[in-house]
Amino acid sequence: MPAGYLSVLIMLFLATAVAALVLIVPALLGPRRPSPTKFEPYESGMKPFALPRRRFPVHYYMVAILFVVFDIEILFLYPWAVLLRELRWFGIVEMGVFMGILILGFVYAWRKGALEWIR
Image 1 (cartoon, helix red, strand yellow):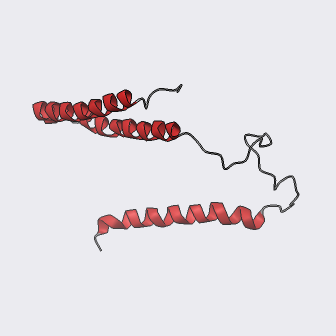
Image 2 (cartoon, one colour):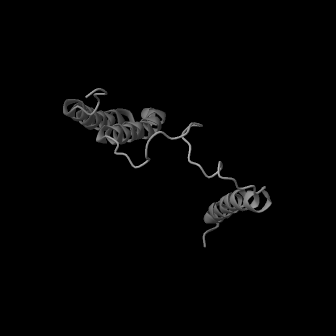
Image 3 (tube, rainbow, N blue to C red):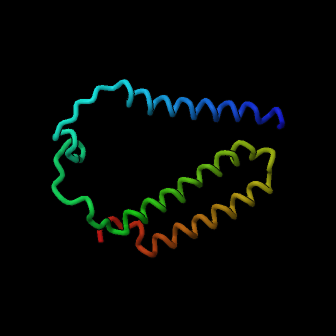
């Protein structure tokens, strides 16, 4: 096994051990005082006023997906900005193509009404 992967393996082991400890230790050492009040569902500290199995409009999902798509853009913009001097014109042209495709997606979502809050 290459020595470079040893540090990744150790970090993976430590992260798993810490996660297991955080979940297991409170379950073993924490107080157990069950009561009917603790088993009641709540929403932000208030008693629920409707069944939890209601339908959500698709619009919420569309906004969430669009947020993820346009948020991922930042993941590509930051390294590009760091390496812009080394990439020169090639990097500018490639980012122009990327931004053009992204803007086309934004215009498509806008025209379809995915950014409208009130329907």
